[in-house]
Each structure stands twice: as C-alpha cells, then as structure tokens.
Image (cartoon, rainbow, N blue to C red):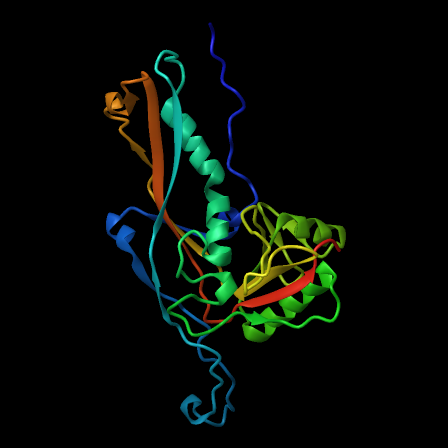
Length: 277
C-alpha cells in the first residue's frame, strides 16, 4: 500500500517572528538564563547654546535596567510505523515546530502563562522591573479609536518606534478603517509603529480580564527581541534510539531553546475596547 504525504505545515508569514528583532544564539551557555541590559529611553532634552550642556536642565524619561530571563524549550514530535521508509520523520517534526513557534512566543509575551515571572505585556515588566502596565482611558470603544489612543501614548512616552500587539480579529477592523497598511511582511500604523496581529495573543487584560464583549491591545516603545537557539533533532544520528521496540513505531523529537525579551523602560500601555468594531 502506498503512503502519500498530506499538505505540509508552513510557518505563518505574519506574526511576532516577522516583526521582532531575531537574535540567533549559538552559545549554549545562554540556555541557563541571561541578563539583558535594556537601552531604555535615555536622558534627552534641549539646552541654550549660550550655556554648556552640563549647565542646562535635562529631562530624564527613563534609564536602562537589567532584566533577568529564563529560557524555555519548544518541541514537536512525529510518530509512525518504521515500515514506510519514504517518510522523513525528523523533517515532519521540524515543520510542526516551526509552524507553531510564533504562536507560543506570542502567548508568552502577552501574559507569561507559559513561563511565569518573565517580563511581559500584561504586567509591564515582570519581577525585575518596578514599572506596571499603564491602562489608558478611552471614551469611545471602537478599535480604531483605541488604536489612535495607543499611538498617542507611544508618542508621549518616547520618540522611538514602538509595537502595538492585538488579536488578528482586531486587525481586520483596523484594515477596514484604513488605519493600518502592510509593508513587506509587517503591518505599520500611521506613525510607523509596528502592528503585531498575533495568533497566540488571547486578548485578555492586564489583570487577567477574560475576552468577551470587550478585549485589549498593548503597546510599548522599542522592538521585541527573540533569541532562538539552534534546532536539535534528538537521536537523528542514532535512529535506532527513536524506535519503540514494543510497537515497532518510531518516535522523534525536534526542539530548540528560545526566549522573548521585552524592553519595558519606556512604559507598557494597555487599552480596553469593543471587540467587534
């Protein structure tokens, strides 16, 4: 009997992975955790040209802070009888891993529900950062109005480009209102902030408010960094080790170590809005 392969899983083309700063990590020492020194929103201001800069009053809006991160592992498996030799077991498992990676990273960034205690959007920075997510008030519940309020909050917090995170359903409303445009593989706001419609974002609030008649989106200055270790195909060099002798099935595992890092020194903002308009 012939065995035919089904449609292959492919990574999503629009996701946190296409919008973030991807940092490949080859040194295995980072897998035990690391400290990240955020650049922050450093001192800036103006001074009269008749004075030396040190004699002027400077406005300080934030400083870089150390954040401690623990890494976490992603894995995918494939299992089948050893008889159909034409099946590439490890390739199938690797495609599963890559197809689901963005959604897992997005969920971790949103509320740290996968690995607790990491800096994330819902709490404004996790255990090492004293800042909390700022909930921005809104008089109108339309998604496009909430989006504009977040843009304003980003502009007041920092002159740098930021990111706005939301569920894909919200992106549809913003596209219909023509306030978001696609450039290459990312979406941009009118102020050129990066819009991230994450498949893994649950739409919950900073206090865990459930998704319902209303939902939430988050924004922050700066760009998320994603660190990715190399893909490890366990037992590929010793395929006999992947065979379960009692059933003669082959079980393979493909994994990698990752971390998603959020610079919260410029502030993290949340806003509640109507989920359907």
